[in-house]
Image (tube, one colour):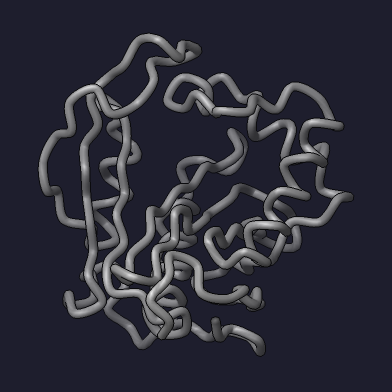
Length: 207
């Protein structure tokens, strides 16, 4: 593996397991992406560097995801259940030198409460370890985001501490809030909630 932060493009896989399918975003998905990024609960806990305010912005977001795959530093999947998009899961800041990345996810309002985030995160985590070859995945969420903390725990992301002032406050870029840091290693045992054999991954899963 080359000693660079993003050595080569990543090739998207068609990931299936735990009742979900993870696939790449498509331009036709822009209306759904817009709903996700303008959802009040999403904006309560996230302040995007580039806000998505309309369908044109959503298409720009999707184009940027394609570019992330090409650079090899970002891997973003639309999460689908019964062929309907219900959220997103992603590997961000992929660093080949240190074999790590930062995970992120969100779920549409109508799909919350069904364990979608945890199932999607576990599916993406196993792909990141087994196919992309990463060693460490980090998960950060704003202090007070209890649902995200529960997702991290369910997926075996151990709490490692609190990062002071590491995230923007909601809707602000000059005020900061603390972040809980969780992480999971490729060598960690499988979480109890997902102790069955790894879910299937489709062709093209390799980095």
